[in-house]
Length: 140
Image (cartoon, rainbow, N blue to C red; front, side, top):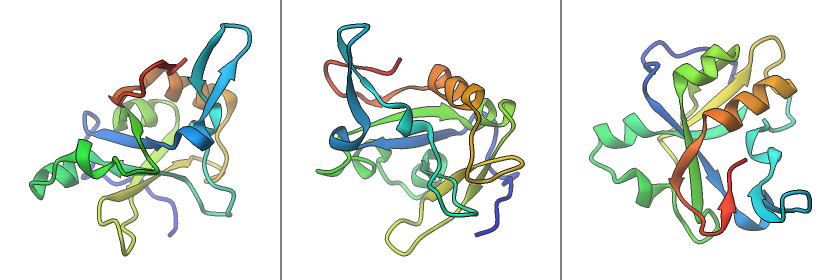
């Protein structure tokens, strides 16, 4: 899908990023703790690929429990940030439904859809809060 910014996703709407502990949790030697990897806040590598997310408001509108929906055996945790926080970093937030997930969305880089700057990744990290927390894992 071509990157775009969806005006029906309000600034306060939560964008949820799923966490797979096997792929997204690392040991931080400097801090002596487990934390989520910066990979969590990176887009896929395809030319128009963004960072896969789920849009909370779509689930709520359909009467779906978002915390249950975003948690499967592979994705045991998740973080969330507002669409407004992503946009303040120069990112685009849009719907991108896929066959097995009608609530799927993408966060794209502004000039280069599949690239986020260090500042953007750091900003998303700082804006994120646990949605479904992984015990003993820090966000930052």
